[in-house]
Length: 163
Image (cartoon, rainbow, N blue to C red; front, side, top):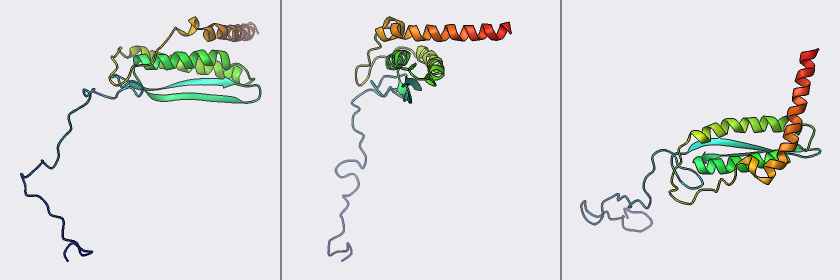
């Protein structure tokens, strides 16, 4: 038999008979130009990495959230990571140096977030950005070690300049 395994060969329908060889399904959502947000699907969105840090007495943990976010979702993730780092980042000897660096690195990401225009969600509702970092309870508690770090840094700077 030509089809092998004692089967007849697969018969192709003649051209123009039945459906076209390729039909595109109607779009369920309007096509968004560029890349959409991985949380809500809104566009424009940009790839970014938002970092966090958790200091512990003996160990430390580096956190990061990498993805493509719109303005609203990026701001929500930034505020959550920044506020948590302000409270949880200071609790280890090495973390006293790493936490301020992490907070400063996130400020560069915040500038990218602020450059994105606000967009309407396409697939799902966006994340709630909530209150700004220093208007959250965790942000207010985080001001205490941040202020202590800044004062120590200034004292060291003045001591080096005086000698």
